[in-house]
Length: 237
Image (cartoon, rainbow, N blue to C red; front, side):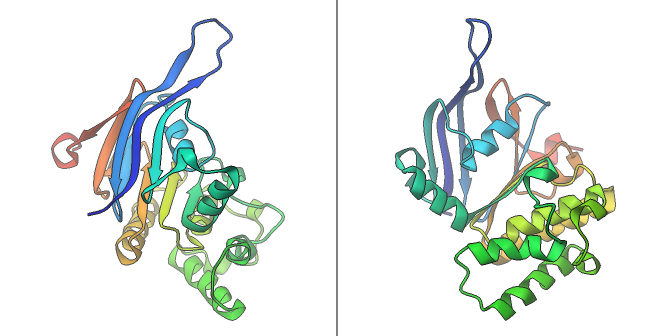
């Protein structure tokens, strides 16, 4: 398998009020093959969100190198980074307000990435694709609703659907099921598994849910700014 993501000696230091600087990520290494579904666990505040925001292009590492699809992102200009992330990466954040435009209805929120992206589909095909994506997460009856009319779980499913709209090469999800019950959480991850395998999408999912970790190809535990891969079958019961 071809390696799609390579993080080498990633360090992230946030400014501190005191003179002592604390490294949130301390020489972190991660290698993910193309088409793999990877989960990341760890206590709150350990750096999981920092890591996925660095991979997602929203934060710059203090040191270290990041490669995506063989491209050394450290050497990219701001314009090149924007173009890469707009065309090839889907992001879903923990806070729904970071994923969704609240002035638009459900349908238009999913349609928007296709309109501003590089999708070759006709407008008619785009509309049909939006309806298909919403049907796959049981939101087809909500197409004309505004986000404030949705439940917390429905907002999360909408956020995932928006991230998938342009069929990205890389999908980054930060706690995508925290507001879903067990049945719907497992169903959503089943859907992500299917998209991963059918379209060769590489997925990184941050989660606290042990049930969902078992549905991924591999799992990493974050501790003290570094990642350790664990055996899912043997260590998670």
